[in-house]
Length: 137
Image (tube, rainbow, N blue to C red; front, top):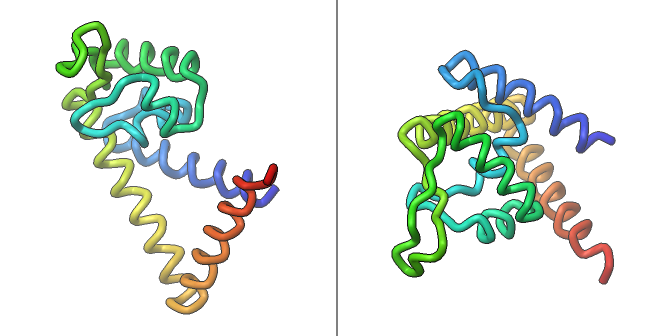
């Protein structure tokens, strides 16, 4: 429950601040792709693997981002039959701003907890995340 509440609160701040900084049409679902999209681009299957989402979901999100002007599809130079999803200038701006906002949020929490407590929190959170990913083993 706490993880879900934290995620929603982080998203609310992130997307409110992104809207204030010129990206009002970007929604949390778009972050699934934008958060894992390299500047050089990637295939949809690679984005699906990186994000942990189904390829069909990624395809729908990429369609939306393309309509909004955040990504474009280009022929993959390694395989002309395949398409790369490449961020546009607006996409790169959104990605940079989102990363900066998230870094500010993390610094704020670090300051409020102090060095030792923050290090312990982060290590514990990473451990719980890894353990949960392995729940079937």
